[in-house]
Length: 59
Image 1 (cartoon, one colour):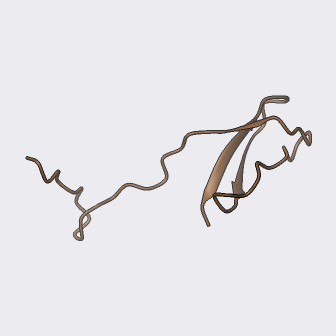
Image 2: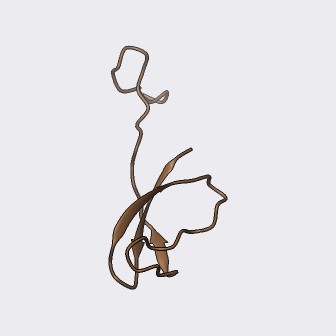
């Protein structure tokens, strides 16, 4: 399951949650606020088999 990053709009707490993509948004673990927003994060980049970045097929 993926890790999602959230930020509470009520108290500003940033936290991570391991959950399914279709799960409900979690409550803030600090203040139990319901108004949280998912943060954009880059967790994985694709690489070629030798560890080098893949080249675009249109080069």
